[in-house]
Length: 56
Image 1 (cartoon, rainbow, N blue to C red):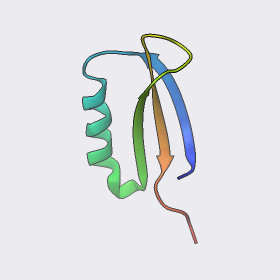
Image 2: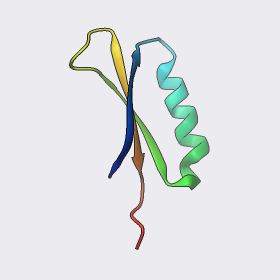
Image 3: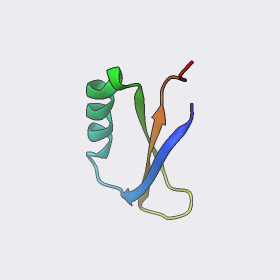
């Protein structure tokens, strides 16, 4: 899947709930949000926005 954008932010307990909310409500827009721990900065998370389908 192609990456549209990434953003590094401070890790908070409910961040996964936000990503889940976005994925559930924007699935018909062909985007997927991912959440991972930053390998470069401790205490930070990476939110990645992916394009879910390729245009033909």
